[in-house]
Length: 406
Image (cartoon, rainbow, N blue to C red):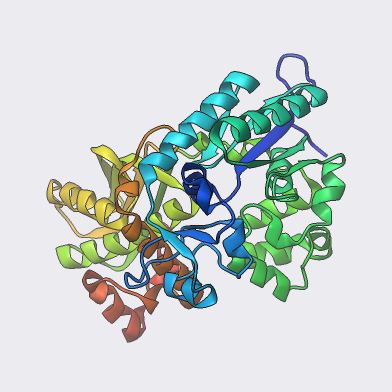
């Protein structure tokens, strides 16, 4: 097993993962204690077609969970209390929690609005600091947090789920722990990937040993390396350091070289939707957009634009991409076009962010991308993508080629 070690003295590093329990709902209950023993969910009203953003543990007793339509939640629990989201309040509390962690632990690696990592060279030290942080957060902010501790960051994240809510779990043997876990418990293994692994007879991490690497590579491409690393716990502790990701992008190679603006924009639109899906899944946003153009003679050039604010939505990425395209004088047909969003950071950590201004729009995007992952890219389309759709149904499919490069 390869553990993260200090560059100065080669000693082992111990990681703690702090995860606020049912964060949005808990913040609302903390500000209105009379809701403490009642089922509560953060979301829109029953007539707005919104979904549950966060459910209290009392609400979860009725089977209510995040992502569930509000009307369905109310069918399960007619007396469910629905509270509209207050993102300014959640970001403010998140700042307080992270400030406490940084002051008490001496370091912090924010991961999302309601979770973070911190570390120490000494196991007893990080245990004491974690317990202290949990107690202070509970006393000062009236919310609970669960904490997992291990000598591997990925294992610490998994361990924080062990005793929720208000849990605390220390993993003694990280390799033994992860190998006994369901593959769906591994961070980065979503529902679709789990289903595919199950179809190969892999239900637990240790069963990855039974699948020859060429088979894994055939089914999961580059992700096969990550799966093998998980099985032996050789996965890097940098996997959760979000600033390692510099940009998110894709390219498309045209079946036939083109100068048609409508066609170019249609494929740019599709690429923007792929980028948005990745950004939503990873909780990223960026502020530097780059378009790549390759002529039919293979001459390649890029055009970059700094965006005034951080963006994540396909609409914003497409809008900025269109401006770049309009500024370019194409002198011959294009063989390839690419879009990349750089200046990547995690959303919602230190300041109120644009995507929080429209929670309904954000949840709608999550639902749309969930449907696309389940039923395919063409299950839901934008009007401007009809050009792509027309090409696809004529047997000239493009979906599988997006991201292939030249």
